[in-house]
Amino acid sequence: MKDKHNVEMEDISSFKLERSFDYLSWEDISYQDLLENVLGNLDDDHAHRFCRVVRGGSPFKLSNYFYRIKSN
Image (cartoon, rainbow, N blue to C red; front, side, top):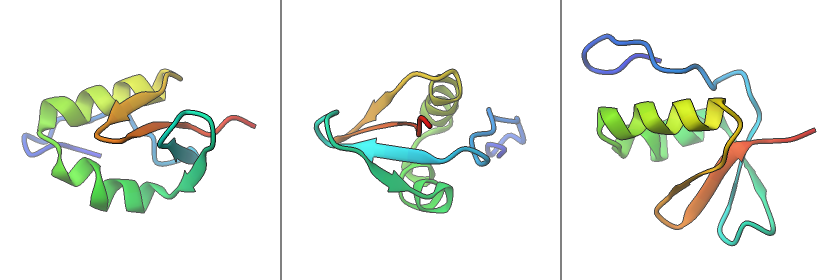
C-alpha cells in the first residue's frame, strides 16, 4: 500500500486481522474492509503509524476499536 506521495507503507494485507471494542472479545475484519472503512479515512502519518505498529505485532486503537494481527 502506498500513500498519496507514493511512499510505501508496511504491508499488512497478507495477515488475518481482528478488532475489539473492549479488548476481551475479538472479531475478524478483512483487510479490504479495514482499508475502505478505516485506513482510507486517516491522514498519511496516522495510516503509516497504524500499519507499522500492527505489523510489529502490537495492537493499535483507533476511535472505539483496537486492531491487531490475529494470533493463531
